[in-house]
Amino acid sequence: MSSSKKSENKPVEFNLKNPVHFLALGFGSGLLPKAPGTYGTLAAIPLFLLMSELSTMYYALVVLLSCIIGVYLCGRTAEDVGVHDHGAIVWDEFAGFFITMFMIPVSWQSVLVGFMLFRLFDIIKPWPISVADKKLSGGFGIMFDDILAGFFALAIMHIIF
Image (cartoon, rainbow, N blue to C red; front, side):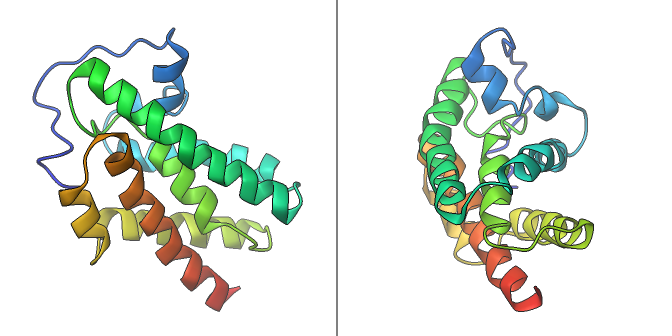
């Protein structure tokens, strides 16, 4: 979490009645105090469990659409509140977790390990995730570091499972 990007010093007003904000805030999960990215990832788990019933092709399509739509959702919401990558914007965690779990057999163990790995990579941001976090802006910048974190976690998940 780059402090320059996840600035929350400025008071902001999100509008949960606005469907763009509602989705970008992970159905409101990003508004929970302390560790909004963790809450956002937790909120992604039920959607993942529903998606896990899809064929590989449809799952991949939903993930791709969540990434593409996420660029708009996150960018628009950040623009509306005037803070780039505000911590409450957690749709990027949804997409990153969906990537983490791609083609992984579903069990409570795999979901737990996937959750922990994704959060680890999203928090510590090893290279090149840290570069993406610092250098990219707008909705694409908000999404891309979490997409990379998802792929890092996915690689390890495939080794484990």
